[in-house]
Amino acid sequence: SKETSRNTYKFFNHHMSEQASKQLSVEQELRKAVERNELVLMYQPQVDLISDQITGVEALVRWQHPSRGLVPPLEFIPLAEETGMIVPIGEWVLRTACRQNVEWQMAGYTPMRVAVNLSAYQFKQSNIVQTVAEILRETGLNPKYLELEITESIAMQNAEQVIQTLEALKLLGIQISIDDFGTGYSSLSYLRNFPIDRLKIDKTFVDNITDSAGDAVIAESIIAMAKSLKLEVIAEGVETKEQYQFLKSSGCHEMQGYFFSKPLPVDRLTSKLSRLSAA
Ligand code: C2E
Ligand code: CA
Ligand code: CA
Ligand code: CA
Image (cartoon, rainbow, N blue to C red; front, side, top):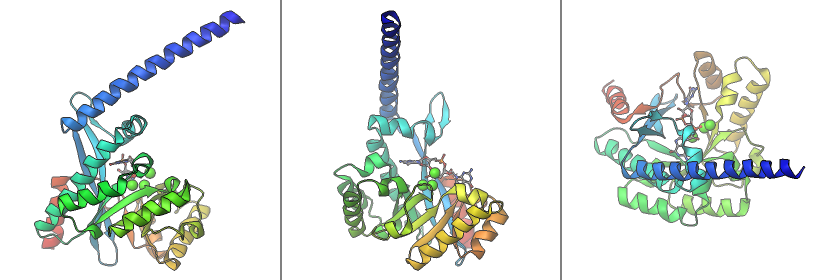
């Protein structure tokens, strides 16, 4: 009836404006978060089992909210992407991670990569290559120690433009990895056209390798194919000794996960590096 549709419309409208104002306030809050320096990075080690060294760390952002406490990224990154706030947040993350890596190197620790997550929205910014170049110049980080993680879903969209951007990024001398690999529908033969260095096998496969024959086969074939394409491969979300052993025997020599370490605040990661270099 007319009455119903009007009510529906009213409801919808009301709902929309509520959502819009909520979005606006979140945007303002996120803006303040950057200005007030409320964002923090945690660093999770990436371990190379052949050298038995930490060869990289992934920078993972959190929001140290004055009243809500430590807010995990999944509670604000999607909103930051919707509002465009991911651009200043992403720049802050990139600059902070690069600067921190320079600090570790200046302190004398064995140089390692720092991996930074790049969201689809950031990747699509026309000045993304310039931004990365500027931050490298500003911080003085040797580009080979910066890795950008892009998701498989980015790689699947508008391939021509994605490849162009990746090639321009590679020209800076940085490394590129495909995050959450295996969750999308890209094949390795498709990715062969992409100038990438590393695949990160998604946690969902790692979770099941020791009890699902299917996932074990998928993980094994990703590792084998990646190697034949001369790509590095790293497993993420490794939590148990069984997973670690299975992956190791399948030829995966780089891993990241709670089995080795949770993401750590900078001082705790620094202590870990100190202990390792003393050992
Ligand atoms: P991701 O890039 O796939 O990061 C891995 C996530 O898995 C992290 O969650 C990490 O803490 C968690 N993790 C690592 N090892 C294990 C494990 O063994 N077991 C379990 N259960 N979890 C593990 P986190 O830090 O909450 O980040 C969630 C997601 O938020 C990230 O997923 C990434 O998509 C996004 N994110 C985090 N930081 C940033 C950032 O600076 N920029 C952007 N664009 N996205 C970010
Ligand atoms: Ca990641
Ligand atoms: Ca991931
Ligand atoms: Ca993920």
